[in-house]
Image (cartoon, rainbow, N blue to C red):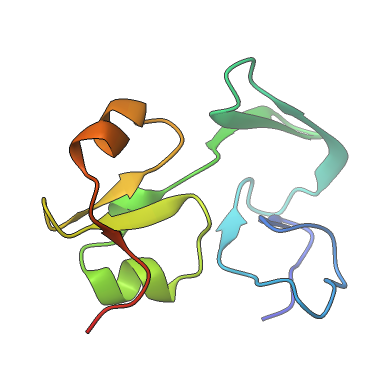
Length: 110
């Protein structure tokens, strides 16, 4: 689905390079264009977006939406990994302590 003026592409501005993967399209403000200036929060956990009507804060990751290995790894989201020890997704940048407790990340679901 091509992006409209009220959606942002998480991976960049169209057209993407051939090796880019669109893994999520997010509606921010219905019916209002998103301005080009986007800013990360100081901890890089959020993106601040401007429209002509409001400022929106959007999380960089949304790994909690994945409830299975197949949906997590199949999404292509580079922020998310699947921990077989705990049988759940982990946001691998924000939860560094999870990386220490989950040494069993996988790259393919069997």
